[in-house]
Image 1 (tube, helix red, strand yellow):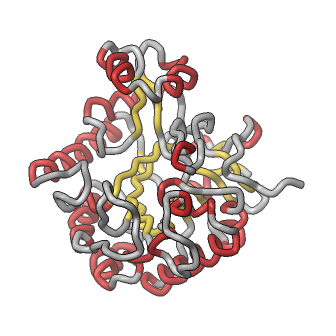
Image 2 (tube, rainbow, N blue to C red; image 1 turned 60 degrees about the horizontal axis):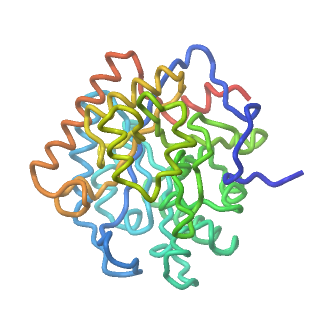
Length: 333
């Protein structure tokens, strides 16, 4: 029997079916990570954590709207006491959830060379990938007093051994697959042909994939899986097709996606009967100047306005938030 492999494109029989009462739901995932210069080579040192206290404001904002975010935490964050000050009470009370996000270049043990290829955890020797994952998971458990059940590989970098590592650790959900994106040009995984609906990685072990939500919009959206990858060297053509309402790829994130585009993406996802919409963004965007997406105070206001508008629209469309426990309870094994 073949070992489960997240990189394998699943079949229709692997698709997760949810109880009828589950409806269409959504989750908000936060890639909760250290600050670093995205334009420079990765390094083990030289990163910052100045934005971590700002997680408390985002958490308060979400609580006011009845949303429990899922914070996917990496090693520098997990070992910074200020993260517990910002989120600990909310996690304990069930107003927030935590998960694991592995950035191998800043996660011990430091036994590999730091380079682009090794920044994808799934490219590491399985023993090293497992050691880094388990060290990080243990650090999160020590910090928050609870075991995380959901995982995202940093840079979406799962590999052939990742499913087995998650299964052995007792995790319930992987959310590393960024469907309709291809990172193979830099040594990463190719998710171009992966579906945007949840599927069982290992049904017997109760391990499922909940991919990030990306949809194609426009007159040619049904041809998107074929046309969009063929234009990866032609960004101007992609832009032209989007402006002409012919074809646009829309990930559900406030980073680089307008409110209007997000609403279009939500409509497509719901019309396509996706059971679970997955939103995401990077935690350093909560402080201006740390990511390309939030340059100044106005940009931060726009980030919150984006979430406010999206949450209001989801409520209008009767799409409720979900927790990891609710997702697993509703999944029909």
